[in-house]
Length: 157
Image (cartoon, rainbow, N blue to C red; front, side):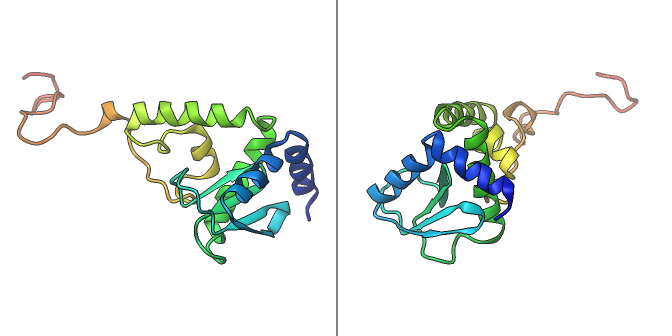
Protein backbone atom coordinates (compact mmCIF):
# COMPACT_ATOMS: atom_id res chain seq x y z
CA UNK A 1 0.00 0.00 0.00
CA UNK A 2 1.29 3.46 -0.86
CA UNK A 3 2.57 5.60 2.00
CA UNK A 4 -0.13 8.23 1.40
CA UNK A 5 -2.86 5.60 1.88
CA UNK A 6 -1.23 4.34 5.08
CA UNK A 7 -1.13 7.90 6.43
CA UNK A 8 -4.82 8.41 5.50
CA UNK A 9 -5.72 5.12 7.13
CA UNK A 10 -3.87 6.00 10.36
CA UNK A 11 -5.32 9.53 10.50
CA UNK A 12 -8.88 8.31 9.98
CA UNK A 13 -8.51 5.73 12.76
CA UNK A 14 -6.99 8.29 15.12
CA UNK A 15 -9.62 10.95 14.37
CA UNK A 16 -12.37 8.35 15.04
CA UNK A 17 -14.04 8.64 11.63
CA UNK A 18 -13.16 5.08 10.57
CA UNK A 19 -14.35 3.57 13.88
CA UNK A 20 -17.61 5.51 13.38
CA UNK A 21 -17.83 4.15 9.82
CA UNK A 22 -17.39 0.60 11.14
CA UNK A 23 -20.19 1.21 13.68
CA UNK A 24 -22.45 2.54 10.91
CA UNK A 25 -21.66 -0.54 8.79
CA UNK A 26 -22.47 -2.81 11.73
CA UNK A 27 -25.72 -0.94 12.49
CA UNK A 28 -26.67 -1.26 8.82
CA UNK A 29 -25.79 -4.99 8.83
CA UNK A 30 -23.33 -4.53 5.98
CA UNK A 31 -20.69 -7.13 5.13
CA UNK A 32 -17.21 -5.63 5.38
CA UNK A 33 -14.11 -6.60 3.47
CA UNK A 34 -10.70 -5.00 2.97
CA UNK A 35 -10.51 -2.80 -0.10
CA UNK A 36 -7.76 -1.07 -2.03
CA UNK A 37 -5.72 1.73 -0.50
CA UNK A 38 -6.59 0.85 3.08
CA UNK A 39 -10.33 1.28 2.51
CA UNK A 40 -12.95 -0.98 4.06
CA UNK A 41 -15.76 -1.88 1.64
CA UNK A 42 -19.16 -2.46 3.25
CA UNK A 43 -21.77 -4.05 0.97
CA UNK A 44 -25.42 -4.73 1.70
CA UNK A 45 -26.04 -1.71 3.96
CA UNK A 46 -29.71 -1.87 5.04
CA UNK A 47 -30.60 1.38 6.83
CA UNK A 48 -32.81 3.83 4.89
CA UNK A 49 -30.51 6.82 5.29
CA UNK A 50 -28.57 8.23 3.62
CA UNK A 51 -30.21 7.73 0.26
CA UNK A 52 -26.97 7.77 -1.78
CA UNK A 53 -25.89 4.70 -3.74
CA UNK A 54 -22.60 4.80 -1.84
CA UNK A 55 -21.22 6.94 0.96
CA UNK A 56 -18.05 7.13 2.99
CA UNK A 57 -17.37 7.54 6.70
CA UNK A 58 -13.65 7.67 7.41
CA UNK A 59 -12.04 4.87 5.42
CA UNK A 60 -15.28 2.87 5.27
CA UNK A 61 -17.17 2.95 1.97
CA UNK A 62 -20.76 1.77 2.37
CA UNK A 63 -23.35 0.75 -0.22
CA UNK A 64 -26.69 -1.05 -0.33
CA UNK A 65 -25.51 -2.87 -3.45
CA UNK A 66 -23.75 -6.21 -3.59
CA UNK A 67 -20.08 -6.92 -4.03
CA UNK A 68 -18.65 -5.64 -7.29
CA UNK A 69 -20.56 -2.32 -7.18
CA UNK A 70 -17.71 -0.33 -5.64
CA UNK A 71 -15.26 -0.24 -8.53
CA UNK A 72 -13.70 2.17 -11.01
CA UNK A 73 -14.64 5.83 -10.97
CA UNK A 74 -17.15 5.45 -8.12
CA UNK A 75 -14.57 3.85 -5.84
CA UNK A 76 -12.04 6.56 -6.72
CA UNK A 77 -14.69 9.18 -5.87
CA UNK A 78 -15.37 7.58 -2.49
CA UNK A 79 -11.62 7.21 -1.79
CA UNK A 80 -11.31 10.98 -2.27
CA UNK A 81 -13.97 11.42 0.41
CA UNK A 82 -11.86 9.25 2.73
CA UNK A 83 -8.98 11.66 2.13
CA UNK A 84 -11.32 14.57 2.88
CA UNK A 85 -12.09 13.03 6.28
CA UNK A 86 -8.36 12.99 7.04
CA UNK A 87 -7.97 16.60 5.87
CA UNK A 88 -10.96 17.74 7.98
CA UNK A 89 -9.59 15.96 11.06
CA UNK A 90 -12.36 13.39 10.99
CA UNK A 91 -15.76 14.02 12.47
CA UNK A 92 -15.87 17.78 11.68
CA UNK A 93 -16.32 16.60 8.09
CA UNK A 94 -19.92 15.57 8.87
CA UNK A 95 -21.33 19.04 9.72
CA UNK A 96 -19.09 20.66 7.10
CA UNK A 97 -20.44 18.29 4.44
CA UNK A 98 -24.01 18.94 5.61
CA UNK A 99 -23.51 22.69 5.36
CA UNK A 100 -21.97 22.31 1.89
CA UNK A 101 -24.98 20.23 0.79
CA UNK A 102 -27.40 22.93 2.01
CA UNK A 103 -25.42 25.65 0.20
CA UNK A 104 -25.43 23.56 -2.98
CA UNK A 105 -29.18 23.00 -2.71
CA UNK A 106 -29.76 26.74 -2.34
CA UNK A 107 -27.43 27.59 -5.23
CA UNK A 108 -28.49 24.95 -7.74
CA UNK A 109 -31.49 22.99 -6.46
CA UNK A 110 -29.29 19.87 -6.09
CA UNK A 111 -27.43 18.77 -2.95
CA UNK A 112 -24.23 17.80 -4.79
CA UNK A 113 -23.87 20.02 -7.87
CA UNK A 114 -22.17 22.88 -5.96
CA UNK A 115 -21.13 20.94 -2.85
CA UNK A 116 -17.41 21.67 -2.49
CA UNK A 117 -16.70 18.16 -1.17
CA UNK A 118 -18.46 16.48 -4.11
CA UNK A 119 -16.82 18.76 -6.64
CA UNK A 120 -13.36 18.03 -5.20
CA UNK A 121 -14.14 14.30 -5.24
CA UNK A 122 -15.27 14.50 -8.90
CA UNK A 123 -18.97 15.01 -9.56
CA UNK A 124 -19.11 12.76 -12.60
CA UNK A 125 -17.16 9.98 -10.86
CA UNK A 126 -19.82 10.02 -8.13
CA UNK A 127 -22.66 10.00 -10.65
CA UNK A 128 -23.75 13.57 -9.89
CA UNK A 129 -24.89 16.12 -12.48
CA UNK A 130 -23.23 19.44 -13.20
CA UNK A 131 -25.89 22.11 -12.88
CA UNK A 132 -25.61 25.84 -13.35
CA UNK A 133 -26.57 28.02 -10.40
CA UNK A 134 -30.26 28.90 -10.31
CA UNK A 135 -29.67 32.51 -11.42
CA UNK A 136 -27.85 31.36 -14.59
CA UNK A 137 -30.59 29.10 -15.89
CA UNK A 138 -32.47 30.14 -19.00
CA UNK A 139 -35.92 31.62 -18.59
CA UNK A 140 -38.93 29.45 -19.44
CA UNK A 141 -40.35 29.97 -22.94
CA UNK A 142 -43.32 32.23 -23.39
CA UNK A 143 -42.21 34.91 -20.94
CA UNK A 144 -40.90 37.43 -23.43
CA UNK A 145 -37.40 38.00 -24.71
CA UNK A 146 -34.42 37.47 -22.48
CA UNK A 147 -32.64 40.69 -21.57
CA UNK A 148 -29.57 41.42 -23.58
CA UNK A 149 -28.18 43.39 -26.48
CA UNK A 150 -30.50 44.44 -29.27
CA UNK A 151 -29.93 43.65 -32.95
CA UNK A 152 -27.12 46.21 -33.32
CA UNK A 153 -25.32 45.21 -30.16
CA UNK A 154 -26.89 47.85 -27.95
CA UNK A 155 -29.42 47.08 -25.28
CA UNK A 156 -32.98 47.96 -26.18
CA UNK A 157 -32.37 49.18 -29.76
